[in-house]
Amino acid sequence: MAGPLEGLVVLDTATMLAGPYGATLLGDLGANVIKVEPPRGDDTRHLGPERGGERAPFISVNRNKRSIVLDLARNADRGAFAKLCAKADALITNVREPALSRLGLAYEQVRELKPDIIWAGVTAFGVDGPYAGRPGIDFMAQGIAGLVALNGEPDRDPVRVTVPLVDVMTSLLVCSGILAALHERERSGEGQRIDVSLLDALVHAQATGLASLFLTGETTPRTGNRSYYFAPSGVFPCKDGKLICITTPSEKFFANLSDALNAGWTDDERFRTIDDRLANEDALEAELAGRCRQYEREELLDILHAADVLAAPVNELPEVLEDPQVLHNGMIAHTKHATLGDLDVTGVPLHLSRTPGSVRRSPPLLGQHAREILQELGYSADEIAVLTKGK
Image (cartoon, rainbow, N blue to C red; front, side, top):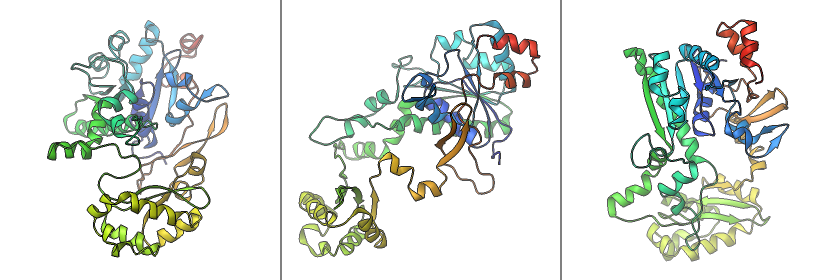
């Protein structure tokens, strides 16, 4: 099925992750996403693990798109871009000024080509203010918004979160912002500008930690795998050397854990309340670790799940690809790449019952769809040959 956004045309002129992944989510839901790339291509085409000339970072976030190469410094290519804009509903970019205006990608410039365009701009820290114009990526936002300071073991230096969660969160805001603006356009008939930043996305996600500061003036410390609010919570080795996550955010789940392991902890004066357990966390964690080492991981998981305990395996990435729930949820999708052949990509995380999204296209080669896109814009074969020469 094409998905609920069938007929929506989105131009992805962004690079790296946050902007392009926002466009991908719209494509997952059926939008016609056209990735407009400079001659060198998206920056992620030149980073990371490679096979057959294709790089993992690009492959990871660019499914469900068609690619065209346009050099927006050339008048002929600017003309093609203008025609694309005239047919588009939304445009996504993360180009910084002054290049943004020099390439004709600024909101007011695009608005001249399509008055009701929904324009979404992604920056690191905000479109104006003291940090405006600074370069920035996920790591920088983690630093400013306090995530690096919170992450890691309490007696060691802080560490960044290696998964690009800030980029991914920002991509969700790009997608939801565009959908909100499209809904409003149905009433007003007018487009608008959307500005999203990595910094704002992460400060938004820091709500729980900042709430403590707002409420009590208390700064949340670094706790590693432990929780600041309750115990036990952590990662524990099993008899076979494999690791398991266990956490107990309420009396119910702590009692379930105690009963499942026949530990009798609910009758132990040291562990009766959440505050007691936090005060005696080292002793409790040592007892739990000792009991985990009595079982193979799968055996222990079966026992804990049967007792309604919050427990999960610590999967290595190859194990994620074999996880039965991940597979059941359709989060590994199979595609046919133009040069690589069979290629798996991540699936669609949003499940609609009547008009579900789907992975319909493998990530594109650079400029793979230029001819068909230009043909759709009304260019002749000779004109297409001129526009695509050398690309």
